[in-house]
Length: 155
Image 1: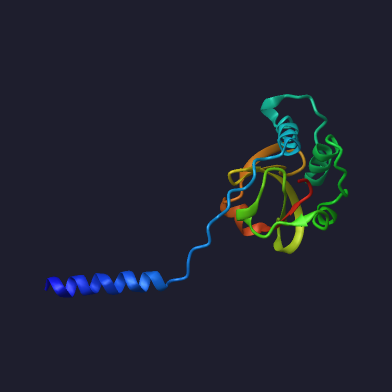
Image 2: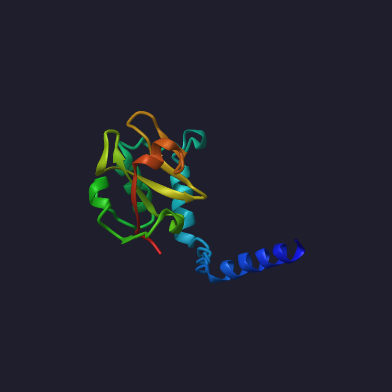
């Protein structure tokens, strides 16, 4: 009985050694000073910060104001913003300051919303006109279903 158990363990270890190696995740580089400054500016629009900003008209107006404050001009609409910068391969590769794109409230594959990635699965955005700027989880059911892609417009 002991020999069978030892032989069984040997087979398990041998098969485990044949498995493809796991890809090691390379940690993301630390956020740049520009990325940190962009997030600080974005957070200043949160209602609890009371920074006396004129309220953004919509999501793309918010993103444009934040980036333009740091010398990074962007197109005016979320669809146009979705064509600038470099694509981010997957949500696992997101960095502070990346732009996130979502489908509109009706779903589909067409860009209808833009937000700024803060880090740790959190983004900041102008949710709807009149609702103010807020932070949300990328992993909530609502946003996970509508997430389309991300673009990197700063280093």
